[in-house]
Image 1: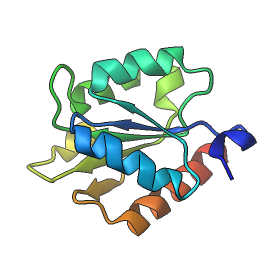
Image 2 (image 1 turned 60 degrees about the vertical axis):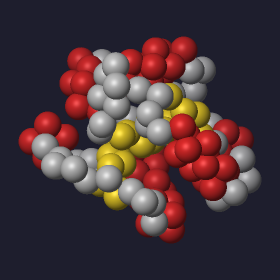
Image 3 (image 1 turned 90 degrees about the horizontal axis):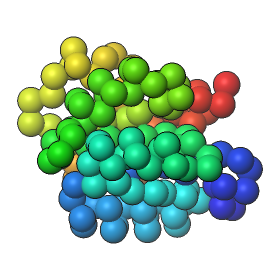
Amino acid sequence: MGAHANGVGPVLLVDDDLDIREILPETLADMGFDVVTAANGLEALTMVGRMPVRPSVILLDLMMPVMDGYGFLEERTKKPELASIPIAIITAGHGIDRARIGDQAPIIWKPFDVPHLVSVLHKLRAGSEG
């Protein structure tokens, strides 16, 4: 049931929290998702450029060093290959600037409600394939 078998790209998890980058991919792997991780927006941009299959969904933390989630979103608008990848925001919820995120991105609160997270991933993936 590996997600890569059907040509669907992995989930890209962008979060500076090492615990989240270790635990969440394991949890999602149990549910059939491939997950690749980046520690900040800049690393994520570099990774997407090198990936043989583009991510099917990006889970993006907002508060990170080097390049935060808002910075990544700004860069994303300049790159058509990135702009087409659906994004979900993951955050502990300290003052989100909705105007900078846009209306499309669902927000997933930390600590994660895993069934909710999985359902959002399925919805976003379905939307990106349609």
